[in-house]
Structure formats: structure tokens, C-alpha cells
Length: 102
Image (tube, rainbow, N blue to C red; front, side, top):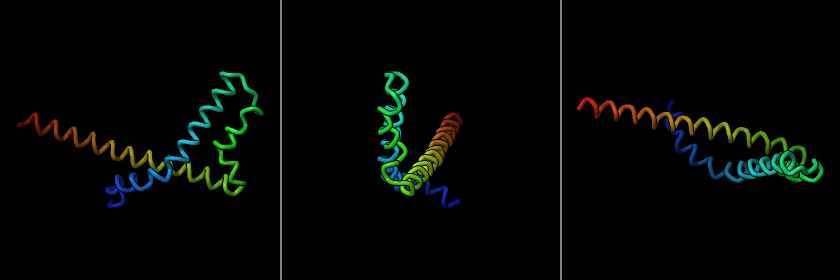
């Protein structure tokens, strides 16, 4: 359980490493979908956005590694973020209960 108690430190350590890849993936995925569906561009015109989004520019092996690390990064940040959030909610409930008794 010590591992879970240090989630804030792990979250803080990993956040700078996953920030840029996740930012690139989210922006390029959003722009691809908007360009294709709302602005009417063909797939050929906006494929470069999908290439950035999926990491195709890294080659076959690099693309696989990029996608796996991006996915693991998202999952890790969600899990540790949720854990920190649940600790905050738990702390707020304890403080509220303690104040109402006194």
C-alpha cells in the first residue's frame, strides 16, 4: 500500500513526461475530426494530422511504442489523479464531520 500512498509523487514525476505526447495526440485528433467532419476535408487532405496523432512518423516499431506509452500514460494519470481526488473528498468529509461535532 506504500506504492499507492505515494501516488502524488508518482503523478508529479510522470506528468512532465506524458504532457507533450498527450497534448499532441489530443490536439491532432480533435483537429482531424473537425477538419474531416465539420469542414468537409477529405481523408487525404488531413491524413498528416492522423500521422502525427498515431505516431506514424516514428516508423512501425516507434508507432507501436508511442501508442502503448501514450495509453499507459493516460491510464496512469487517471488512476493516480482519481486517487488524489478521492483522498481530497475523504479529507473534506472528515473535516466537515469533525466541525459539526464541535
